[in-house]
Image 1 (cartoon, rainbow, N blue to C red):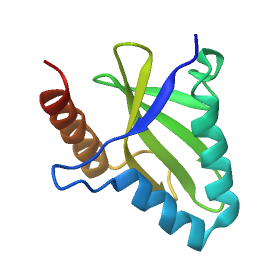
Image 2 (cartoon, one colour; image 1 turned 120 degrees about the vertical axis):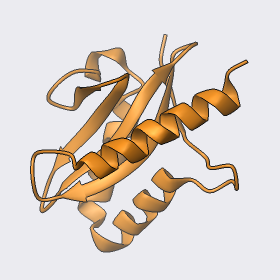
Image 3 (cartoon, one colour; image 1 turned 180 degrees about the horizontal axis):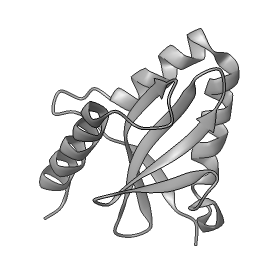
Image 4 (cartoon, helix red, strand yellow; image 1 turned 90 degrees about the vertical axis):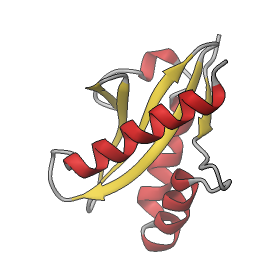
Length: 117
């Protein structure tokens, strides 16, 4: 009864979360490894709560890793035990900037329009 984790893709086929992870792999391999391990843990329901994850409202959640900078992957649940990762960010503060929440919400809406019947 595991969940599957997939990445949002733009209409042009790009994957913002994959791009975020690739840049993180180059700039901070330890944080990259921690986020990758966190994404793998999301397959198991027991990790869908704090301290690894937190609800952000509007159906969005964050996968959190505290390191030199706070690294996060924003995601949502879909039918059939699917998790879709839509946005990745790094910041110094605890709060997620409103701009990043808007991006994640827009990608959530876009994914639903293009992928649900």
